[in-house]
Every structure is written in structure tokens, then in C-alpha cells.
Length: 445
Image (cartoon, rainbow, N blue to C red; front, top):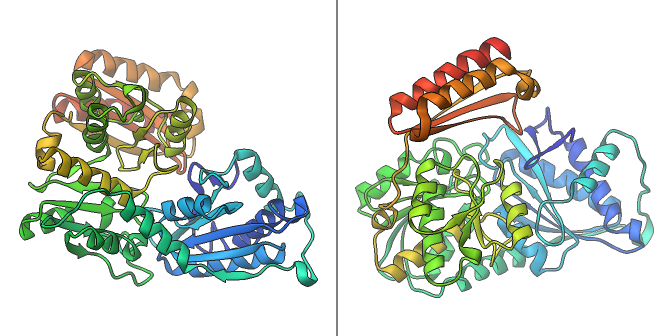
């Protein structure tokens, strides 16, 4: 794919990703789902709080209506809110404007099909061809021109859906929320307030520039301090578009996606709600998670890194729980994509039902020290055929034996080779990574 990566069309706003791109995407999507089939398409559009999201929204909507589609505007909402309402409102497709955890200077356009899942690559390829001028489509005219609809009720329905998914009260529970000055700012607090929680919220004042800045799931230090200083029972940090969630336990420790998979997986299995007794992590999940799942007699099936691979595996095999270390967790029985706020509610369900603190629920997992180094390389595509690198990997693996593991892969969105090692000690993991990084830098500069 030329423009669309593992998580949509993403890049620096106004440079890599321009309003012209947004307009053309809107034009093609509006025609493909509408006039191409001699019908009027209904497309739902949401955005995060970046300054540039507003101009991309305008570009997309202009393209949609110019092709004859009706554009329903959700305004600021989490990505999973768009996915939910695409299904609930029976829209032809959904569009989310967001660069997730990236800085405010970046933005992205994520496309979803009518099932609330990532759009098929065949359609994305057709959109790319249109962007590059390889195809033409007609403009709508007369009464065939589309309209825009202010669809705030869709966001309200999404909030109601989250509240209804929780069949428990949070009365008396002190919860900290870090909304990353992003999409969660319009949703998270009303949900926890409705459930009766004592909510202490931070980073909930977006100004167009402060999304993800020293806050949220990518900078969780402030929430850790907040939980400890305020004596809170638990804290949750979301990313810019709120499809990820990391937690902080009652002791101020970070609970990442691996630990969330363990806590929720063992609970669901205990109550007969974990399909095939199987969890779907990625190859980047910590060795400590796999060993803890083994001890709990849970099976697991790993996928490549990327929520689209986790989702594909879950849908193909019918599994009900999967996710990534980054906090992108998918509960397949109730959603089609990762939802940070839903994840935090599912964690609260376990805490309330088991009558245990989050720190106690995580205790059985002994996380191995992990070192990850990103090596910038414009020649990352040569990695698979680079024998010296794989010779270095084998040598490091032999040194670690069963006391650790190594993973070397390329980034799906950046010119990076990622080198990761886990071992029983930080020193052993660092030594393994250093030995491989040196070869990558020499062979793939």
C-alpha cells in the first residue's frame, strides 16, 4: 500500500497528509458506497482534538457530499465510538480522523467498513488509485448532492452503550482518569460518573495542541503520581483517540496490555466466557505473560504486531479476547475494535467481582525485563535477506537459552528496525540487544 498503513493513512498534517488527500478520500468513499450502486451512501465521521482534525473533517465531508453521500458528523469522539455507531446506526462506512498516540503535528484518516472493522485492502487500493489520478468518478448534481448532518446523538448513544455494558456500581471507588487531552475528554468522565465512581480526572482540557503531550498512555508517569498522591484505588490512561488503555494499580504500578490480558483472561475463563480458553496476544507480548498463562492453564495464539492482525485472528477463530502490550485490547464478544474506556470498565468488573485490588490480580505475572531499541534504517526492507543480522540473532538466542527471547522486526509505519530482547535480568536483555543493534547499524545503515 502506498498511503494506507496498518492503521490508516497517517502522516504530518499539511505535508504528508493534506486536505486534498482528505477530499479525494471523501470523494471516492462517497461514490463507491453510493452512486456506484445507484443509491445514496450514509457515512459517519468522527475526529480527535488535534487542531488539524477540523480541516480534515471539512475536506472529507466536502468530498463525501460532492459524490452524493450524506455525511453524519459525530465531532470529537473515540475511534471505537465511530466503530460502534457505524454498526448501531447501520451506516455504509465510518471514518475517524486521528493519529492516535502521535504528536499533534501528525494526523490520520482511518476507514471502517459497515461492520465497524478496518476497511478491506482491495477498497483501499482503489482509493489510492483515485488519489493518484488513475481513475475518475462523477460529481453529484441537483438533488443528488449529499448533505451534512450534525449527529451528536450518535455520541450520546455510544456513551449510553458503555454505561449499559457495566452491570455493577462503582459507588465509593476512587478512580483516576488521564484523558490525554484527546477524544476521551468528551466521554470517559460521564461514563464513570454515571456508575457512581469518585472520579479524579487529569489532562482533560484539549486545546488542539496538547493531545498526548506528556500525558496519556504514552506518558503515564503523571497518572502514577496522581494515583499515589490522591490515594486512589485505580487509574486509567487513554491515548489520543481512546482506543488504548493502560492502568495504574493501587500501588502506582503500571498495568500494561499484557497484564490486562491476564487479569481479564483468567476472569473470563473462570466464568466460562473465554472462547476456547484462548487469549490472542502478539509476538511482542512479554515472556512473563506466556508463562503465567501456562500456569493458569490458558491457551494462547500469537499474531504479528498490529491490532488488525489480532482482530483478524479473533474473527477467523471466534476468539473473545486479544490485544497488544500497548493497551489495545479487544473484547470480541462485545466490540469489533480496541476501546480504551470499555477496557477500563472490564478491568473494573474484575476488581468488583473478585473483591481484590488490581495489584493483587496482577501478582501472579512476573514480567521479564525487556529492552527495545528502534534502529532507523531506510533499508529496512532488506532485513529478511540480511544474513549477518540473523547470525547475530541466533548467537544472542543461544546465549540466552530458555532464560529469555529475542524479536527483530521492521516497523509497519516508520523506517525502523525494532530489536527487542527479554531476559531474567536487565543486563542480559541489554547485552543481547546491543549485540544485534551493532550489526543492524553496520549492515542496514
